[in-house]
Length: 213
Image 1 (cartoon, rainbow, N blue to C red):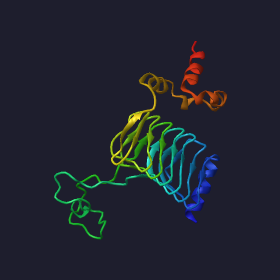
Image 2 (cartoon, rainbow, N blue to C red):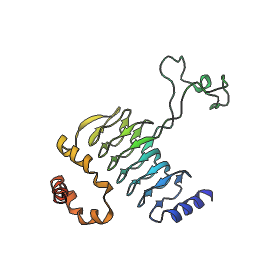
Image 3 (cartoon, one colour):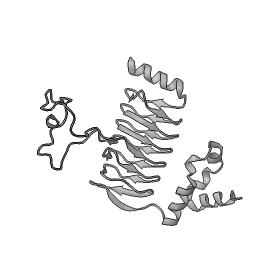
Image 4 (cartoon, one colour):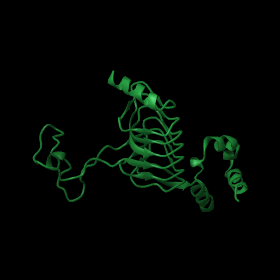
C-alpha cells in the first residue's frame, strides 16, 4: 500500500512519469518528465527528461536526458576492501552487523557506493552492471551484460567483462560538435521540428549551422 501511494504522489507531481507494477522509487528521486520505470525495478537518484528504465533494474544513479536503459541493469550497491586488508568481511570494518555481529564499534571503510553518473543520450543494454561511482559520458553505449568498472568516455561503445572499448560512435570532429551543441537541451518544439535530422549526423550539423547568426 505504501509503494502504491508513493506512485500516486509521483504521478501527481509528475503527470508524464510512469511507474511500473511493483517498482520501487526512493522518496528523494527526481524526474525531468516523460520518464518510465519498468516493472519490479528499484530506482533512486535523478532521471532526466525522456529517459527510461526497463524491468527488473536496480539503479542508484544521476541519469541525464534521453537515456535508454534496458532490462535488468544494476548499479553495484557497495564495495569491500581488496587492498591491504587481510579480509573482505564487513565484521572487521563496519559496525552495521551485516551478518548479525561485528568486531568493531565504528566504521573503518567506506562501503556504500557513490551513485553512478550517466550522461545524456546513453544506451545501456540488458543485464549490464555498473560499479558504483562510475561516470558514463554523453552518447555512450554499454553492451548487454557488460561489467563497467571504470569511466566510459563520451560516444564510446564498450562491452565485455570487464567492459572494454570497441569503437567510437563518430569521428572526433563529430563528437566535439555533439558535445558542444548538446541537442538534448533543446526545447520540445525544436526537437519535433528537427526530428528527421537525427537520421544522419550530417543533417543535424546542417540544422545547427543554419541557426548561426
